[in-house]
Image (cartoon, rainbow, N blue to C red; front, side):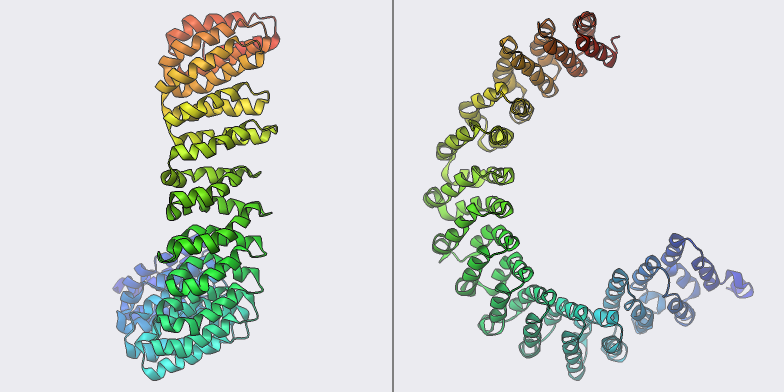
Length: 589
């Protein structure tokens, strides 16, 4: 330190000043990250007397620098002499908690909350609580916003008299003229409630809650839904109806759809918090109203909670409530004008099968399933097919197939090719749901028939499906069932069907490997290189290029190269071009 005293250029503060004057923001951020090193070099006394006052002077830098500073100060307690001197860190953090940039304020508040735990009760009252009061009384909106987050950490450690003062301060924030302050108070009310005694919750927090829940701005009211969950968790059951449920009913029927949407999104959390009896008497009717809400966003949010809400119902009345009160409302959503509502319903309604059992599923859910399977929206159909497992486990694959197959066949033969395309694209998913035995018996022929559909998009989708099916069921299955049927198409009179053979071979070669491709599929491609139709011949050349990557060099040289060289002499320009492309790509030229 003697050298440092003799040469001011080596003083840590001087070094820090120089670094923080650099025009490069990243270098200044890096300097802030090194504050602990400077503090260690200075020692605890000079850190308190020199470094912290200097830090206060730089609280006007770029936001990136201030963010790093707010984060570092949260770990500074050991560097200023331990918990006894933790209050020395409050002034710079207080300033940071009032800046305009929200992310900096949030980090400063986070550090203040950490440091509060290192204060003794007397230091809390002497240093931390006065800071909170100053911020509550501050003219800056940002000051009052940040203050809202500090009550829950200092309240438990102070005297009864100071607690009363803090409660009055929080009341002031809840009735602040500025919307953002009231929003901040609403956001923190739940955390504050968790550290209060039960009598104070009933006498102070619940009135605050009711006041904010009836705020003129929906931005405040929707925040109270989350608070409702927190308060309901700590209140005794007998107090819920009188103190909370009235406000919850108001929120569920609020004129703002955003508030109702928030209620729907948090509904199962509310259900868990209030318990089974209140759920039966109050939440079931509220859920019905949300399911039938005039806004589609609310109906979507409520629909997504359908399965979980029903699962959480008490076993004493679950089935009766579902069948008589929940399902009738839910069935109306099957014909909802908004596809997102129908999609949300399709993603969860099959989850009711295990709750209702086999007979009730067949009677009540199967009609819903079949109706949604025929929906005009692809996403609705996809979601219903994706959830077949739930129903399959309850009623069994045989009975499910009796209902499912006629609908699949109806969709597969629909006059509109886009409808057929949708069911084609879902076939691998269905195959995975039902398994190999069912697929071979019921769906295999249907899949192969799509390869000769008169619409190219159907043939293309069916071809791509083969690869997915082989990935599920294995190449041995493909060799026994798929490949023979594909190869027979090479003899079809319709040249479009013959071309489909080539397209199928292209995708199958990738999953079947070298052995099967060389022995079973390559001969067909070589044979089709002599097809009378030029389109077939140049597609044969393209197929040889495609499957060449899985063939060994000997096969390429002895079987593929001669055919491609002959095709380069073809009369058709396209055939010649693609043959030459294949030779070049396979390094056979």
